[in-house]
Image (cartoon, rainbow, N blue to C red; front, side, top):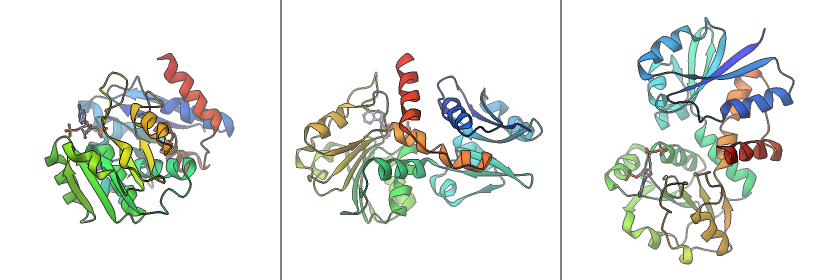
Length: 277
Ligand code: ATR
């Protein structure tokens, strides 16, 4: 029987998940289907309760439902609980299980594109304090980063986020961000700054160590002004598209039984699609 999976969100038109999973289903010759469904907040509880009966073995979840599905799931793994949101659902013995694969995607992208990135100073500068930052911090703590500097335009959000995790996270004022560039093995932008239509992230990377890796979660454009500056200074850079691709892996393995790979072909497929829209 065809294994059916979907991605739900509101709106959902922009989701690239059907392209990613469709590519892997074709590549592995799996009898599966991956569709997208627009589900409003009012419809969420009903959609989840009817999912299994409609033949779905699981789902991906995007904005604005990531927090709500965590509350509604029967079981949530450690990542989902720590991040406070879920993006991957599946059924086991009739129970709804939830995970969050964003931290996994973030780490795997760096592992693939900047090998050894986590072997140096174990020190990071994280910009932003939204949901994406929460996943990034969980990932970095899992790799034993012991010196994390967090900064956000709205300082109170950064303070709250740091308090949620660990004393290894030190909050500094947004205005002083450039003075915390030195000595960091990793610099991460989790804000929406640098995205097409948004202002660039202004930061002076001149104090960065030569071995610093700079990564941006923004992937439209692929090379943000932050990454441009880092490249011009000879630093290693990693764009945000890989995180989107890698976060999809664990769900695919869970639903269809095969661990898929993030290849250059898949990357190009999504780059071409982004260029069209
Ligand atoms: P996500 O869940 O994707 O992380 P979010 O919760 O909306 O999205 O967070 C967006 C992040 O971008 C926040 O850190 C936000 O800063 P505030 O908490 O001060 O809002 C940051 N951001 C957005 N626009 C910004 C701007 N013009 N200058 C600085 N930071 C900005």
